[in-house]
Amino acid sequence: MDYLDTIYVISLAVKSDVNHRRALEPESSLRDPVISKLVIVETYSVLSRVSEDPVPIAEYAIRRSKARIEEVDFNEALDLSILLAEELRLKTLDLMHISLAKMIGGRQVLDV
Image 1 (cartoon, one colour):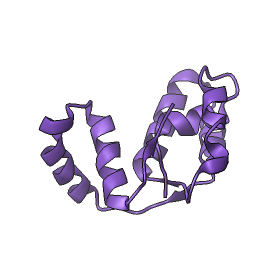
Image 2 (cartoon, one colour; image 1 turned 135 degrees about the vertical axis):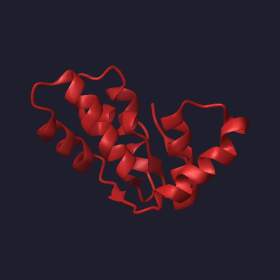
Image 3 (cartoon, helix red, strand yellow; image 1 turned 180 degrees about the horizontal axis):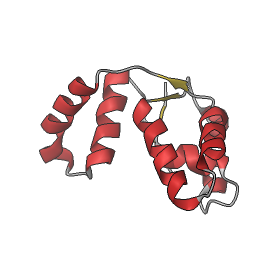
Image 4 (cartoon, one colour; image 1 turned 30 degrees about the vertical axis):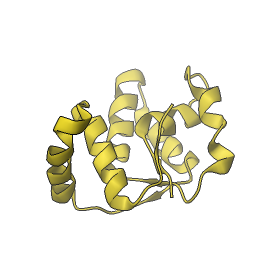
């Protein structure tokens, strides 16, 4: 399965996004795409800063990704993020996405 990052989900759905074309390339080779609720929250958050009416765009972006939402224990994800922080040295949300993908068993974190 492939874990889709927020940037990929938004870029895939928004044709005016600078990364839209790049997001289309791997779409046909995705295996069982999944997202976490963190992707959903981030999608709404990002789009609320760039659109007067973000809800329909966010809902479309999530549907357009064709990913299923995988439930995870966020306390476990936080604990794993703490363990990985020193090694990976990423921003907090990127670290969380890596942790969530590992917990879900994702083949990769797909972004653009």
